[in-house]
Image (cartoon, rainbow, N blue to C red; front, top):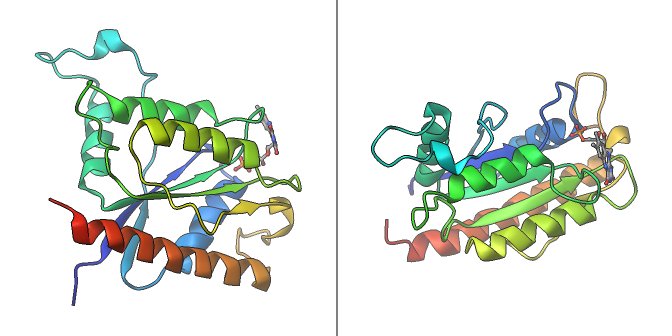
Length: 192
Ligand code: FNR
């Protein structure tokens, strides 16, 4: 059997009872067996500052660990809320940290997918598409269809964070299958 697709799951919210975190758990639970998804923490990453990027002295250890973790992954799944119609700073910071030093971005050619979620009806569409803008520049082949804007996220989970909406579960399952197919396409062309 082929090695499972190792997927980094990056969640754009740090709060404990985050709907994005619940969504990420739900997505991982319905992933096909060909995938091995794992949440990679981003809240511990110091704000990106080029002054800390010395090529002789080591950069901040959390940056190095994060870069190595993403580099080793076959694919990345972004699960994010929307802050002021854009990407939460913590997630943008993770993108920036992974993108440097110049010429050594860990994002390059890494297949990805985005699920955005919000208690509002439009499902964090703005964050989803702002994120896509950065991913175009970072040369991340991001799955285009199906799109995933999860609205009314506050109504989808019980008090333990368990998904209680069957329609959403089916949608997330189909999404993860499509993502597995998407990532597999790039894996078969990978030079690694
Ligand atoms: C929000 N929220 C929000 N919601 C939305 O649909 N569009 C938006 O632009 C914003 N803007 C925004 C800014 C800031 C600073 C906060 C704290 C919140 C509400 C947001 O969707 C809600 O708090 C979610 O519960 C946040 O996601 P998590 O933490 O549950 O994953």
